[in-house]
Image 1 (cartoon, rainbow, N blue to C red):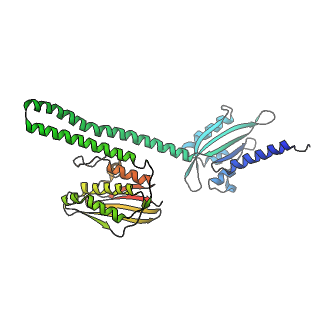
Image 2: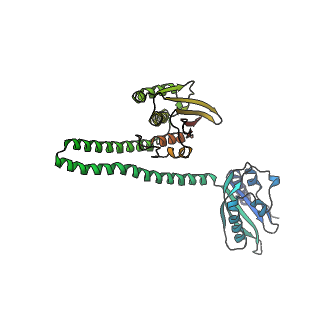
Image 3: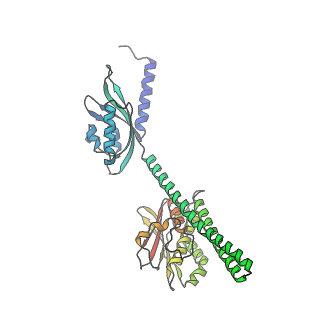
Length: 367
């Protein structure tokens, strides 16, 4: 047997380096299937899924138990076609069950290796984790659907005041010709109200689109200062409704973007006054509570209003979804609250029972 040359040694070292990199890369693993022995080898990938390598199934049929039921037959059928020579390159995306029960998306590709007589001997393939890619794709689809819904809702919201303006412009022409000063003033006021409403919708949509565009500036917030400012900002509205805005002591200090938190609480207090203070002597409570699992801060605004039917709890956080069209507002406030929460990695929701008031909550995880 001849002694390995320097070139042979370099080639062997290169192959070992490539293999080492492949096995060290956590999202990539090799697998093999020996056709003669009907034996599968994927121990390293099996361990990465949290299973015991000693309990790894040795057959394709045994491994199939780990495949998601919705993907199983498609994967097995593809392998059958591949082994039968109907396709030359095996490729499939499917879900494998992790030991803790969650599903991991896998991209699997394989080629056939023949023996010296040219007969199929074994299948050599790779698995790589595409869970992040799948999740990103799903989020993109959801955002696209959300964008389409927003465009549709926006066009509807802006079309309504335009119809009003067009109608009263026509009436204004008639009243000008007739010289009816009272009707002219009425027409002008209605046109001004419609354009003001349209301007408010546009301003809120622009604010919603800008939120988080330049990133978040995180700091430990003093909610006492923020709530004091809210009491000043809403002083006239609170007196108008004979309502009070109170702090729920003690207040936690969230680490968050001050402008985003101010907008969140402003919108929630505005919403509480608008929908929860139809009767006098109502109290709006603003508070914050530290959370341990997961760690973070829970902001909340509680009102004593009529409450909200559970079937609307999710819908009201979408743009232009309002419980009452008789109330003033653009329908963008709660959508802004939800977006601010999501930008911090948290969420917003409401807990409410008809007749028992509402409590809007925003969780901001620790930075």
